[in-house]
Image (cartoon, rainbow, N blue to C red; front, side):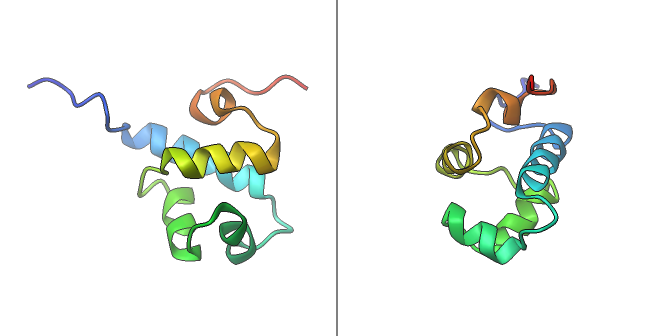
Length: 81
């Protein structure tokens, strides 16, 4: 059965969630960060937990407010310092 290329693997969702949580940092709560992203705290929690795939709009907003690249968020490598 062919894979659906539009859906991310569970590992990828967990990795993206980890990077979003890392970007948020420990000093910013989920509610405030979710507000900046234009999503609910519940949705951010589910994204950070690797339960749901973030929308492209959410990822682009994250890049805009954090200065991180979309490539860094979506790939396994670390962003150069």
